[in-house]
Image (cartoon, rainbow, N blue to C red; front, side, top):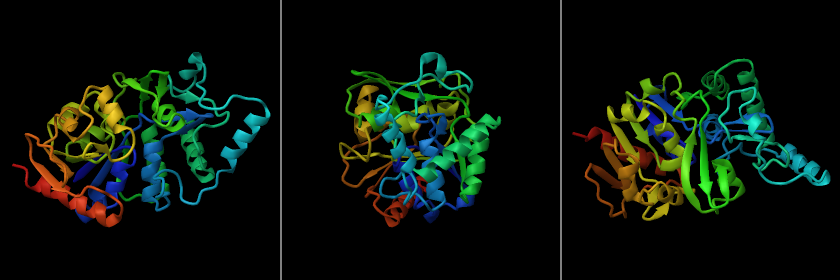
Length: 330
């Protein structure tokens, strides 16, 4: 039995090769939900959706988000209407009193749908409508995710990290931003002061998460701060990881991030913005898998291989290296 902690695009790419060592029936993936937002009244869970679309064989593998070949007519129409009506463009938070009204959501993750700042495809939107409707009917996010996973034919167990609201907020020189605003709308350009996981201290791991962490755990090459950090901020998760076998894959190729703003965000939380920073980010890790050209040294077992993932064969090679690390731990 094995459990992956997944966020962003790094770990989903790794999961392409998971079957090289682990059977789908014995694989659980816990997905980050700190990136979740409500946009135009729809509940969007980007890291969960990437895994749904990947498992369903419809993921856009050029972008590693959204559905391959999806149309964007609704998104375009929203922009056209906003322009014609003289409505503002860009991310617009709903008023503070609306952030927690009706459905129990953490502050600063509810956005207006006017001139929708995230490009959401039409088929993709159907998933958000379904999820939102299930939540409005009284189902938990875990229950909604289970229904959607069944619809897409997933053979792995997919769990959101929590049914409670957690918002990854980025404090920048241009003000407070949800991670989606910082990364999608502002392309990660504002200087980062610090990172906050609002709501995490009151949240609980979703049903099955702590049990899944009793198995061997693999942290893929996801952003340690905003992809994995929200999970570690949940009560009980770091303690559970300290009691089990954990292998972490570096999200860095030398000093360059595998993808996304990992380096800037690690620097903002006072961790070295490179592979060496993983020792502080994951103090519970029993072993690391790093690139064959990376000279970083740890006080724990380290396996070196080419960690570039450009194909399923690359992912399989990396999975075999991870499995080697697990099997050779003392």
